[in-house]
Length: 488
Ligand SMILES: [Zn+2]
Image 1 (cartoon, rainbow, N blue to C red):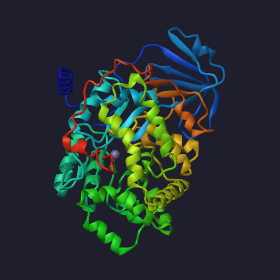
Image 2: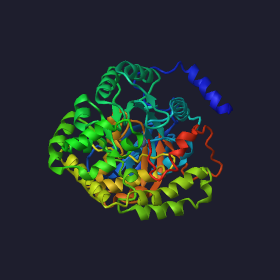
Image 3: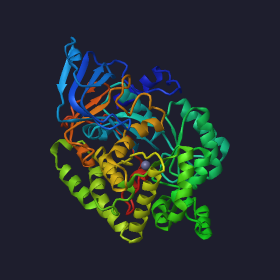
Image 4: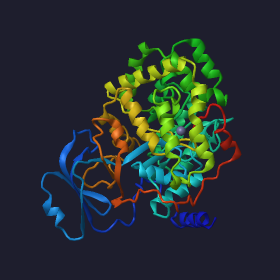
């Protein structure tokens, strides 16, 4: 496809971008200013709401934020004044864990997700897609990515980079860093000593490591892992039965086993061991990315409600850009997960996971809101659902909002540019029609989305096409037709 070729030429011309930590912002900022006046501002810093706030955007950055009279800014030439009285202003949402696909772009944006943290994707494709979005060649949320995840043979999922030795692992980290990835992802079959080497090598390149691991969270935290995806490693660190621990060690190279450990081991967690681990995680600054919406689908009490919402939503004729396979997979995930997770032990596992999240937060831990959106999930909407499930687990709505704004930006070293509404930062902002602090589900009342200082048209366009579809191997696709569908 010519567009794809064009992208590769552009990538070559760009000199394979330097490995320093770049923010993906527009090179050409919009001209003029925008003044949003009269709304209630929840800026993401953790401060309480500010009523009657004014937010002034100049080009693609926030210029001034104040409360009260703002007439001096409104009268400046070339200024668009938008009255948002009675509305709520939040930073653009950041989904902390996705597997990006091009057709999902309009869905993320319409749901106020202006940035996504992509993991374990197909390296050349996601780097091209990131470049294309950053340069406004195709629409989409700002993309940050780990590119291909580091796993060990035989490998758990297609598109991973399998490494067996410390030397190989370090070489792949250096190569990824050289290609401009934003962080590194370690995967389920990686042994502790390899994880340690990966984290050391990544640190030398100023990159953090995020892990969906089958290593104890205690060990991983001591090595310096930045985030535990799907709460992986928590159960291994809060079970002291030597037989179970030995089994985990012995079965680390069985793909089905390692993919199931998070849910299978959760019911066996020993809450009396939580506090000790939590203290260590907080001390080490290890964040938790629970992905409850996908990993506990079929178990959490909102499953039926989400299913009905998705079925109704997919009737919209403007959404013809969602591929048939994805539609089937989105609708089918509900019955599949209900069937696969009907054993009452999963209710126990879910309750213990919620308990862990609550204690972790109370101890000062950092939670990341992540959907784990992939081929068979609902981009954008699933992040709002994750917020609801985090509030169910004991986060306040304000804390849940930070988990989808400030926290993921800080996690990947972008806190100086994104995640809060503060002067000088990139102007990603959403306007919503209801108070999210009263009811977190009000984040779904999206009325306006501003990305990079530009008011986006978030109506679905029947003309939209995914110009650079991600190549999906038969092996990859087969994972979405199995009884126990799980994202990488
Ligand atoms: Zn994932």
